[in-house]
Length: 466
Image (cartoon, rainbow, N blue to C red):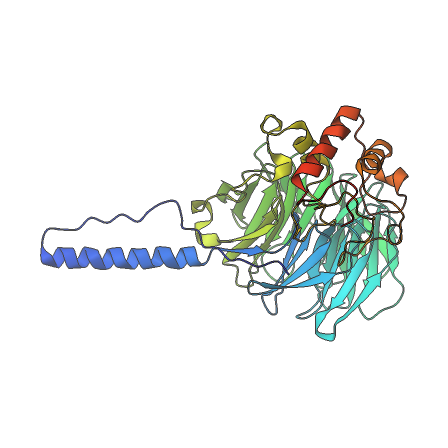
């Protein structure tokens, strides 16, 4: 298991105090200084990072019962965190896009392998829920914990009984579905799609009631809110960078918020319903008051890449965020903008091309998000390529290879790696987990192979079995 590290980062603004000349004033101001310093340290101590994933963070959820954090990652795994110590839930064959708590113990996750997995860590059991034919982008759990809803790019919404049994599928969207959310009474379901619509479904009849809103661009995320026990508005974030608030009953557009930063990729509502947080493709987090829709904070949370995931802590005082890094950042909400942005080091695949050799650039763009060249390798979606030359495909201990690669007679060499990227993994190794990609130019393939041989050699030579 990779070591898990917690960090504390101090706010940028220092505490300043002026001491008076008299002993009385000096003592008074010293007291203020110490108090302010202790307050600053207490605030800084609230900042945390959750480290251990080997790929970008795609989803975050917080249990309303226990306050535990669950994370979904491009590294194909789910992290279930007790404080800053994770339990890893392994079973997905591709990137995990979303995770939701079903109750205090169980979670459900889904992603690019088209399947949902219902996890029961206490019983050391998991149940795979199959039926979608494209990746699953969104999940929701009914208020009574009896039903899971899934949003898939097969243009359907899945309804899965938590207790088991066959699913129902709601059809009506004309493109992939990105998000779903249950009404507070559990009688209705809202879904948002790439087709730009938000639909309201009657769960008793498993039928579409009406369209809440239509948008000229695809809708990525949705959230329900309103004063009192019954939700009165729905918020959504779209591809064109607009966060829109719509009255559920009348369809009136109550508020549009846009900074010309696109797209909106994450939405989260605080437990008390008074704050709405958004994350966008430029790495900004915006927090607004849900009564006045005044913007309270708008700050650049990530130096590189988007904000894909947001979630408030159980008490609403901390905002968890994830993006292109393999780290979850947890900021105290009261001082959100006083902290430095995440991604202080640029991931390899986002480095400027002119700062890399062509071989390193090819590896960064095509390989680095899934593979490492170090011996330990980390929690990546694919196996480490350390000493890969001379290795039989599908044989690195501890990695869950696809059935296609287990028992393969491919030996990785300059020739086989060249052919892999000439044909594309989907043609060279049909059925493998590797994404479809090709490197067309022979010189680019040659440079990649030379870089892999040098950077991941570890003393190995061509033809040496590792």
